[in-house]
Amino acid sequence: KNEVEQSPQNLTAQEGEFITINCSYSVGISALHWLQQHPGGGIVSLFMLSSGKKKHGRLIATINIQEKHSSLHITASHPRDSAVYICAVPGGFGNEKLTFGTGTRLTIIP
Amino acid sequence: GAVVSQHPSRVICKSGTSVKIECRSLDFQATTMFWYRQFPKQSLMLMATSNEGSKATYEQGVEKDKFLINHASLTLSTLTVTSAHPEDSSFYICSAPNRFSESYNEQFFGPGTRLTVL
Image (cartoon, rainbow over all chains, first blue to last red):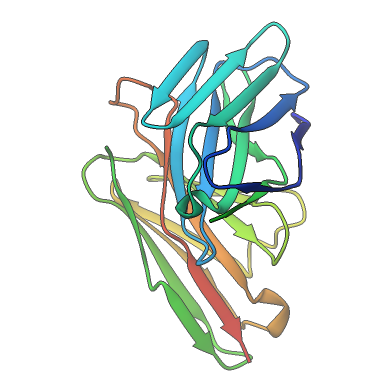
């Protein structure tokens, strides 16, 4: 089973700040997911990435496969970005079953 | 992007009753779907893998007779919580990988079903 560690667990920041959330895992994988969960519970898939960097609006995700590490960045953060951000990794190459990090609860203060 | 729906979004039931939750892939065929459970303040945990046309496979510690999974078509998997008890109250989420997408392993998540057993 892939062990997933996310940090920080909680993060409070002022509107406009640059946010970084980190995720490390133990077993080599083909791709990693970043998910967003709002207070109502629904999950939104933000990124799936297997190498390098992906950008979507103010969100940027990077992954270093050799280091087994990924980061999610939010530029110009906004109160509507307040949510729980979760990284999820498969069990290994060819194993689709996802293991989830404990999540980072992000609160952006206006 | 691909869409996965769940129904109902919220259900409250009495202890001892059975509850069925549906997971549908709306614009792609899903031979595999995954069911997860999330207790308050905890991570999502995989419960079982639903396979179209064959039996589901359950994770260790998940009772297959209590959580019945049926994947009768390429777009629908159902999870039935039988004889529900208050400890089954949780948020249930499904996901499905779209084998035909550019990103073969990308999984699409349903919005979740909040089950409360009284």
